[in-house]
Amino acid sequence: MNQHADPVVETAAGAVRGGRDDSGEFYRAIPYAAAPIGAGRFAAPAPHPGWSGVRDGTQPSPTAPQPVRDFGRLDMAPYFGPGWVRGEEYLTVDVRTPAADIGTRPVMVFVHGGGFVTGSTRAALYDGSAFARDGIVLVTVNYRLGIPGFLDLEGAPANRGLLDVLAALGWVCDSIAAFGGDPDDVTIFGQSAGATLVGALLATPEAKGLFRRAIMQSGSGTGAFTPEQAQRVTATAAAALGVEPTVEAFAGIPDQRFLEILPALAGLDLRTSTAADPLVGLSPFSLVRTVQPTDGLADGPARDVDLLIGTNTEEGHLYVVPQGNLESSTTADVLALAATVYAAPETALAAHRTASPNATPGELRSTVLGEALFGAGTARMAQAHAQISGGRTHTYSFGYRSTALNGRLGAAHTVELPFVFDIAEKPWLHGETGLLGPAPVPDDLAARMHAAWISFARTGDPGWAAYDPQRPAPETFGS
Image (cartoon, rainbow, N blue to C red; front, side, top):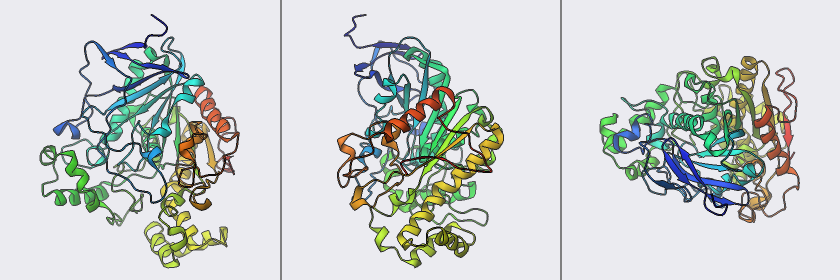
């Protein structure tokens, strides 16, 4: 082959033409399942029928139908990407590889976040060039979101977005050797909702043998809705659409209409006699399970999988700072939130005040949100995995404080991503409303964090001691 010609890879479904840049080769918008159309939006992912000729893999994929997300003054476009880019064939993966030659390189598969309703492989934060530069084959995954992905419907398999990720892992197993990757050396990692999906895979029998290692960044092992909670969302969605809550009724409704009714699903009270709302009202969609992933690890591959797991020190700041609520929150606001999260809210708040005696109401609100959404479920997953895996668990804490929004954003949810992907120097992450703010970031933080992720993917050892339940001291980054 002419060394200047675009590279072409043969997969089981057909040939794909990619492109080259300084970090290696890239292949975009490769289907791992058939396009989800009509009633197929509510079915398990089906095998792709394949194609003849050479498919163009140089252009980005359409994205799952999704609403616009607004985080006030903070520019979250690098995280959410371009939003809904219409096109039926969005169940796709992007691949970054040093070269599509010998299939012996470690593979990392990334699952994006976005509250189960937004996000895609097109988000600028998921630029995988640094992984390819360092000898890793990186795969990023699109999956169904919102109503097609996660609404619990009679006659439809549950957790269809999770089934999509499983199908993508199956594609990796079958096809990644052609891109230079080792199908027996796969690490799956995700952030936020993506990390919660990774946690669910650890408890999913069908995931056995599909990956050796897993990384959960700011997710939860206790973020699933109970069937009773999910049915409240389904009933409300059906009422807003004026149809019965069945696959047959939903099959003929266009995706645009599903997005239009999302405001009707916001703020539902999902508390029941047996369960709090694990997402504290921030999203009407999550996994649906009878038991939380932390309590079902024995059913999945968790026993044989190394786990790296952690959170940021000020996760909740993303949900209070851009909206101005760090300053405007009152003690009454904190009490109201605590009442939805804790069985004994006054006792829990007293403990938080003892730990941070100078905390303002806004800071306490952030602390409660961070613990409810990510902290408690991460701690439980670390403990449960360490118990079942015999100590193959590593924990971390990310504490670098972004200087965005007058220095207030801090070590908020998502701030670690530019460091993991080693792109913290990109100008579009900086400035007063950029995710990392106007101040320069520490010179070595991205290099150190990115290297730890790669070391873990290669060996199962990120560079520090395994988690000890008796002395749970995480490795710290930027704090």
